[in-house]
Length: 96
View 1 (tube, rainbow, N blue to C red):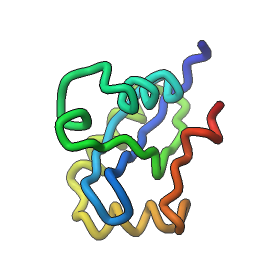
View 2: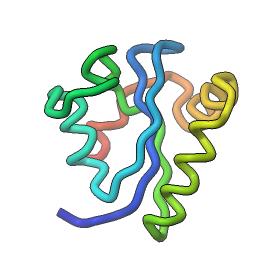
View 3: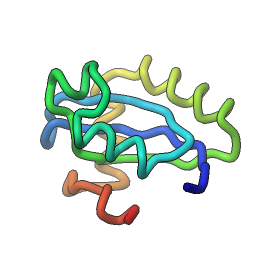
View 4: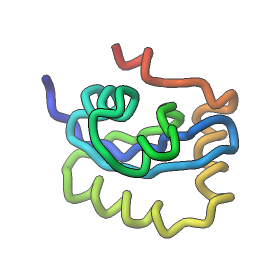
C-alpha cells in the first residue's frame, strides 16, 4: 500500500460529531475506522464517514496541520468540509 501523508475529518452524519486524524495510509486508516478495528473515539461515537482530507508532502507537515485543525473552532471545520464536500458525502469510495 502506497504511503501518502494525509490529514482527514470523519463525521457521524452531516453536522454531527467530528473527528480529526492523521495517517500515512488514508485508505487503510478509514477502513479501520469504518470497521471498528481500533478502540476509541470513532468506535464509541460511530464516526465513520470520511468527509474531508488533505494530502501532504511529509508526515511532519501533516501532523502539524492535524494539530492546527484540532485547535480550530467547530464552525471552521464545518466550513472547510463544505468547501470541499458541500453534500457531506462519504469520500471513502472515491479512494478505492
